[in-house]
Image (tube, rainbow, N blue to C red; front, side, top):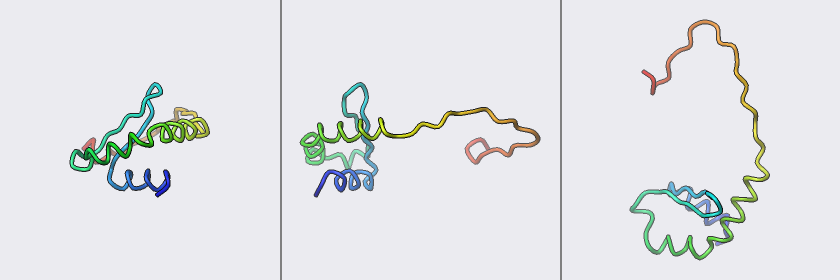
Length: 80
């Protein structure tokens, strides 16, 4: 299994990975984050960090601009 397939497998298991100040961070269901899976992540940690950093450097950012809102704006389900 290559690195991309491994990351896709983690994503399918609701495991999130991100880089924070050069360190790999993770979050996921406790029953999924077994010691074996954590060892697999640690084994390729440096490659994951490089891939995520490269992806974040090439990701395009979209500037946020305020828009004019006239009239009634319905509430979202969470707001209701």
